[in-house]
Length: 415
Ligand SMILES: [Zn+2]
Image 1 (cartoon, rainbow, N blue to C red):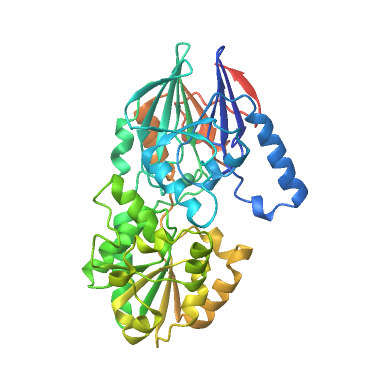
Image 2: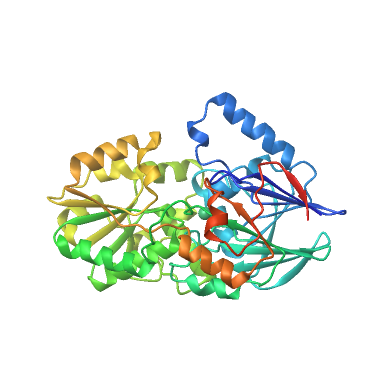
């Protein structure tokens, strides 16, 4: 059997791995490089052409989680390619279709459940739920031709489900381990600490309107924010896209709060977004949120800003412009790299001009060094392969008892 990491041996994001047996060719993740939008049109075209080659005659694709640096090139996959992912991952991806395109619409969706073994094109595959900043993330075990290969996907131990790593399979032949944070010496703040920091921020300015920028797909973070709101008697306001993501996830896991199941979450409707939904005949995504009972207007917010915490995104800036509040505070709860992206410029300028204080309350979606060492100690792989990292060479020093195998992009090895 051959293992090839097409992209990810020296890069964070844009991951794609190929396993090829005598009978089948499978891919694991098919991501877009994180800096894709900053590349020249020629480079972008090159990325797409190369990826189109990787996915030729692919028998099945396995997706670890719903982050674009793992699924962003799905549109290049041939129609009806079987794609395997958890139910939660498919639910979140389908919501991309509200405002844009469901990246899985042309594919054959095959939901898989955690800890169940599936026989697919002669390969045994098991998904292991793990903690990451994307809901429904999993590691994937592939067993074929007498070998066991475990792909970590993106993983961390400091989230609320961090202990899940203790259910990973052990003594596998190869562990492909993400190393996003391998070059950073710092420990990660836990998601529980993040919740306390939200509470502190509210307590520091009890009469302010608090805006929190966080990914609509980071369900655990939204839950942490919601718990902080509950503890300070505030109502969490979300936009229709986020509300639909929560509602979709809540149908799978009823413990997830959503606008239609709790009084403490309400919805604000940015006109730009509702117009787009109407133009696309997607009004059901508005009506399903019961706007009669759940809608909060900018006038409501202006009247009692201290009652609310708003989850915001760059695309809602026009709605924010209409709010009149004496004191607005802004919390950035997202990877800092997004702050400087070209498409956030208007939002950034509005925040800098109108918010009296900018605070970072965030914790990485990726394991710190100690956590990575815990994973390796637990799994005890026969070979360790760095992936999703810009500093693979640190693996030897940090995992002295492991047999580290260094690969280059597109280099096939026989295993
Ligand atoms: Zn990720």
